[in-house]
Length: 480
Image (tube, rainbow, N blue to C red):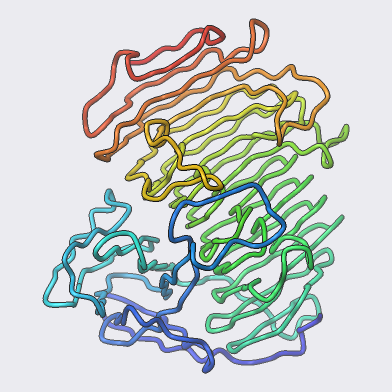
């Protein structure tokens, strides 16, 4: 549905002083406000939105119906733009018994007076305020001031101004842009196939809650697209995987926020048989995997047989069931290589924080993880189907594993390897025990050449291999 005819000047609330500039976006009139929090920035009220999230880590193989609502709860989020320094005031409707702001390493120092929290921000950031535990948390998206300008009258611009829009499926052609303005909520999904030079940008919200699992492609579905730029907007309540670039080249995802991913298979960003992809400055709270790099059988061909040059930097990844960082399990490619995750924060996870699962033919090599902070796993009520999980096997910092045939392994041959994987400055801080798990497949399908440097558990540097579990098909593990 084309919306270039919508020419609505955004109503912004802009507060300026000698020290700061703040841009606030009023919400649509019919949007429900959070029952749990009020928020004020530099003495100006900020609208606090709601999003449905996972309440407990309960999962099962797709049963033909969507996840029960009683396994979920309502959380809150707010967004604004600023530069300089701002004062944030948050009023809780609950008595504040405990308070944690995550990532903890951000070092945000709040003052508490009654049910009110105050603190200052001096740079854009994405973080979570947890009062009396992680349930019903407040997610704050403090954006930089936007510098992109668009022509709303351009026929190649799908412009959505403040308010509510029932868009359905938005199909992008080459050289087209979707712009979702601050204060807008667009109910729909965006697709593009066999195109070049597309943009999906703005400050508003794209919401797929009105779309059933099989009614439309992913929230952002890109197939065989070159030169993609996605920036600034909030993705809420996808019906399946949220952002899927498949067979794509040159994709940049910057400062996007994903929240409300509570459904079965609600992954965040899945990079499929693509190359030259950068994800940065992004917040994802997902029930299933946050960022997954996959080789899928349906996407494999001679032109898309290598996944390479993937950069993930400066992201905050809260995971409610799956993995925050995942390569695989599907690896139907010849090679996955030159992949890096750096400067990332994991406030919560359940199973494994950093995971490479090779279930198919792919040769996974030259992968680097650097400066990763890992906080508390969520272990209460963790269940697969009706079977409670063994908590001793949960909360792993790292797992590298080559699997045999299984549910998600679809290749007809197994010749996968995992080789030359490095971990530098990995920090785990939690009272829950943790370990590293390394599992090869056989004598020709090995986990090999694993380098671990500056691995800390609760501030203590680990220099021996007592915390590493490995089988006989693992070679050359070095820790220093």
